[in-house]
Length: 71
Length: 190
Ligand SMILES: [Zn+2]
Image 1: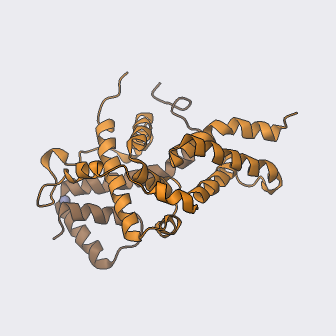
Image 2: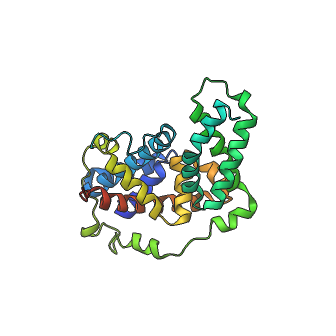
Image 3: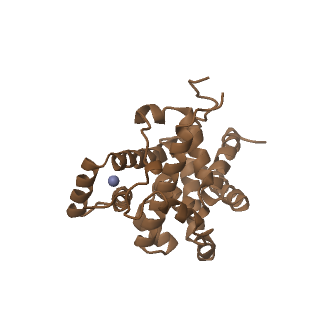
């Protein structure tokens, strides 16, 4: 059984390349049983998506001022 | 006499500069690299075929120039000089001796991901957290996540092992997660 710290390391490396099947299974098992790590995984995934959108935002200058539905 | 084309480039300059500063984290180098990119864009006007978006094309040139800076031998040593281990200790404190989460460091619920990415508050927090990352993890993180360079290429550009690269990325992401959580779950001042 992975520890939470080991699980977070796998979550990160999963974003950079394919992971061997045993590691994948171990991580899956841990995530099934650990709510905190599930959240962490979702958040690292969100950060990954945000990074991609960030570049596009800069190019399109969707700056916070010009396109702000909250204001 | 300034052509329309040059006018477009000039108006793009502040954004290019902001982008380069965030990547390189050094104002002088950012100025230089933007200057070079603008020069390339000016002299290669013909190679812009109009099929891609003009901005995307110019940013692509800048991206290429920034990677060149990272590649340069002279730059590398300075590049990988970390500001110390203090921020790493801070990260390790999230976990107990048995490597499970500390109760007061457990990740909280952030809500719906789509709503988060549509929120300007989130993007302000994101930018602020990026600026607060120490230089080394910030550079590796922006290469990987903002410029979408794959990890093998980052290793070869920086001449570091893949393991080393993974560790830096892991720490950058976890640090950013911590910072985003704090900022995102804090009500914004009106
Ligand atoms: Zn866990």
